[in-house]
Structure formats: structure tokens, C-alpha cells
Length: 434
Image (cartoon, rainbow, N blue to C red; front, side, top):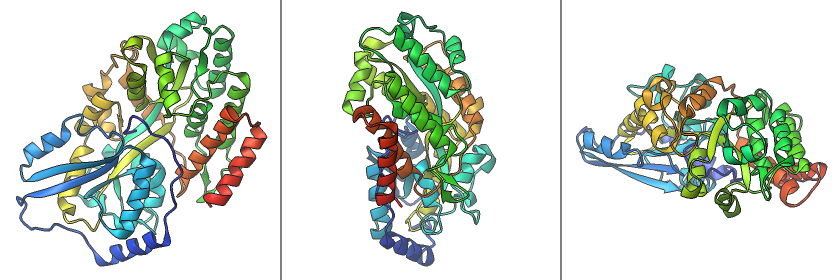
């Protein structure tokens, strides 16, 4: 996903004021451009979060060079939760950027009848190729009436990144193919390998960084997550129940260091070499290199995850009330084309949502010089992306995901039993989300 740290935080729910403002916007404004002159000098603002990679890959500069009348300004918020809260305020009070990023856990709410009127229909934008995008990704941003409010930037197919030196010290294989075979097809096998590792682990090391990563991986690879037939179903969801049991097993087995992802102790644990594996969506690669540092170069490798699943991904949308809707749509279409998405992948590791990029050399031939430089990283992630079986989502998917992740932390850090943590999680959901 397009950032180096992508924590899930519970954000405020959409207020009645936001809904009222969006409905008014949808009825009163058709958008358009402030000038009919296609060569008029304009500024396009792009609001996003974390690291989408456009600046890093030189794409903004390239677009401005090809369109000398356009200046692009990127307004970036580090954390998606803060970004989403601010976006809701702007939906009701004004001040939207010409292009707004939307994270996958918010897309069901953005496409709802209450909010989709705020965004233009990108399916009608010149140059859009619906068939180029992963079908399930396109569907996620499309309303029941067929309006597509966002074009996919990236997806979050998963792998397992592991410390091959620690695996060897514990008597486990280090080759990516052999490691992949250890847990192929079953997250429970991943936990079992953790027990084997822990029995011979180098002193002071753990098999995994956190059971929340395991929970997220297991749930993300399940066809049933938090919603069923349009209604919240987290209490008896097969995916949630399986992920919770696996996390419980990992905590009870003592194979997790119990860290909170993206917090400072988690970051420093990379450089201190205190854990051997982390569930690794494509965007996680940047975290590993950044926090492990030069001293751990050559020690990390990458293997296939036990099951294909999607953890992360985003969209670019164009507010319907913008002054430069036509030009903003053209920018979005260009940024999400396969060639540009492949360049972003090369630079920051975000796997394209445009499946035509999967045949480009920038993806098929990509290897990560820091993580498993001989491993076919591009092929691992693109194959995982194509194997994803998307689950139904709903308006509070992100909030529910965050609540259950925090519930796992109650077991890891507060030493609550599985039943106590589950009860506390349901109580928190009932009081603040529904």
C-alpha cells in the first residue's frame, strides 16, 4: 500500500453534517474547469497519505514537463487515520484537493449513497481502460448504480519476509522456495514453524514481530471478513474467528515479540534483530530496509505467504466540485496507467492495481537488492495479487479491523486471556463503532 507505515486507526464516523454537505454538493455542482482554455495555467493539488511514490518516481515532474501549463502540488499526511478525519471535515466545510486519495478500508463508505455524490465518475474519463484494472479492485470503487469514483493505485498482496540468518541458526532452511513450502496453504503451518523456530531460537529472538500481523494476514486472505450480505458479521465471521484463534495460539506459544506495528519499539526491533519474520505486504519492504538499516543488509529474504490475500491498497478520486475536474481526471488516468504504476513499484514497492503492469519488465524482472536480492520479488507479489479472492467490505471495515487488531494487543501486551480480549473488543465496537 502506498506508504511506509500504514497503521489502522479508528477514525471518527461520518457525521450528519458531512452527509448533508455531500448531498448538497452532488445536487448543485457538476464540476468542470475554471477556464475553457486547455492551455490556461492552473495548479492541481493532490491530497494523499504516506508514500504513494509519485514524487519519488519522478512522475509529477514528468507530467508537468509534458504539460507546462500545469503545476502539481502534493499535500501529504503521514498517517491515513489523520488524513481521513481531515477529509471528512473538508467534505462538509470545503477545501478539497483536486485529487483525493482513498484507502481501501474507506472505499465502501465513499461509494455509499451518502458520500459518492462528492466524487466525479472516472469510468467516463477519456483514456480509462476498465479491463486493465484487477476486476475486484475496479468493483470496489464502483457504486451500485455503476459510477466509479476512484481508480486503483495499488494493492497489498502478501508475502512473508524473514531473516535467513536467524532461520539457519534455528536449524530451518533459508532458501525462499524451501521456506515457502514450510507453510504452503495454511496459516496454521506458519504458527507451527514458529514453534520449531522458538525451540532452537538464538537467545533473545522471537519468530514473529507481532500476532496482529498474523491476524491481519489470516483475515485478509479469508473470503469472509467483517461483512456478509451487506451487514456486519464480525462476531461469527469465519475469517475473524480463524485469525483470532491463530493469534491466540501464537501468543500462548510464546513465538511473538508482542510489538505494536509502526510504533517506535517495533521500528527499533528491526535493527536489533529480535524477530525472524514479519507478514509482508508489498509496501512493507520499504519499512524493513528503512528500519533494519545498512548493518542488516543481506540478512532478509522473502517467501510466499501461506495464502493469497490483500492487506492494503488505495484509489485516486476527483471531487466533483473541483475547479479543474477535467484536468484532474486526466492526471489520475495517467498516474494509474500500467507504465507509471510499474515505475512506482520499482521505486517504493507498491504493487500495481493495473494488471497490465504485471507483464512489464519493471515488475516481472524486479528483485529487491536489500531483501532477497536473488528472489523473484516482482513475480512473487504479482502472482499473489492475481490470486486474491476479495471479500465483501462495508462502511466500517477499517474501524472493525483496527478494533480487532487492538484486541490482539490486549493478549500480547496486557496479558489478557483470549476470552477477556474478545469480550473487551466487542464492547469497544458496540460503544464506539456501531
